Image (cartoon, rainbow, N blue to C red; front, side, top):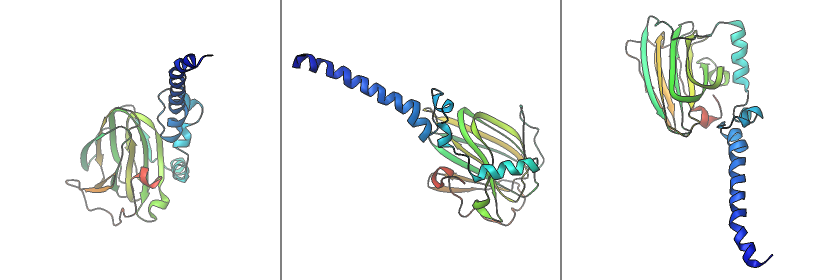
Length: 220
């Protein structure tokens, strides 16, 4: 093979290598590292579970739901409940995360519906004021465009959702809720924002101190 022929094939070899590297990233690396799985191969091979491992929070939540009717999902938006009515919207850029928590006393039911303009990764979880983040319980982790139902808190504390946009497009999220919420808090990148609820009763004693955005803290 002449030197000229070797040089002429070099661009093709580089192009093939780049395609292979890109394919490996899309098929294996992204599903395992971020949960982004555009081909579905990562899910079939169990790689997306690496990005979302089953932790103690999920085990505690499953144990709770075996004993109590904490979360009841429905196919249509639930009827509004007496108490506070709230609507919140937030736009998530690609791979951006946000966490939204209501302060809810034990036993005060909440009806909710959230919907995104695109699919979102979510984790619905809560932790009590008495015991803090170490006793966090997760009641559902997955990917969906919408979720709705009623929630009956097993303890006084903060209760809500972590969402992450694992797509390459902006996604607008809308949350509607009604019931016994007394306050709300937004946990975004480098920010914790108190969000009072108009007409709410006094909040139960407790604090959200120590709670961080899930993506930063490794799970709350």
